Image (cartoon, rainbow, N blue to C red; front, side):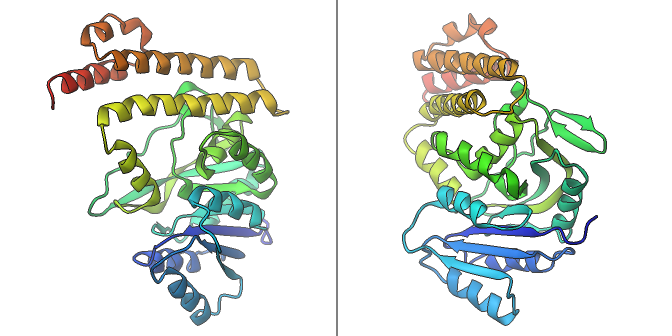
Length: 321
């Protein structure tokens, strides 16, 4: 492997004092030294900024930079801005509370270096579930062999995001495509934009092994958003989730239509349109709250699991449980 390949890690922080030391230790101790670490704090009210600055100073980390936003911009915008700020050839988004295996940078860089078609590489993870946290099951991906590597193929199973942003690496020269996706999509995020843009261009790949310990707790920004959305009704949340999936699918479809260089556009659009139709039918049936209507709509479902799950949730609602 070329030794002068440059790498950047970008981390968005907000009130992360509890776990930040374990995370930055795992960055500092990588077997392949990171050339640039940019940490951008989004208005923490705890000691996150102080802890990070002390860590940088005490370890003489001259290639690490801490930025403190004057105005809170939210984790979504914070991450996409950081991807554009980074200068390394390979850029690694990083959460504030996980623990990276010490060979993550080395393994993912090596994989990307040997295959120039890889624009975005994702890996697997192991979990550390803390109080208030719930397991995020590692979902399987449909892939095909590309010499030594596994390319994630554009299928209905793979279209919706299946990996968290903390297991990604992206080529610097692909960040503009990711940013285009982020800017045009409704309520997008860096991981959705990385996944969707690379999948559309057939440049999304999987390193089929864990590279981090993914901490699951009840205090993450995304977890808080999810809890807020579910606060009034889990049943309505299920309907809203299907509608949000269709918003994401529509954004992906628009991206495929508008971007040059994407192959097999018609086939990809057909996959998306079929998925959107299925989701819309499910949402409509759930809105009716009728078990009978769902039972007689089996042909409108692609997956038996979704069919029986919807029956279960309607029954649960009707029984007042």
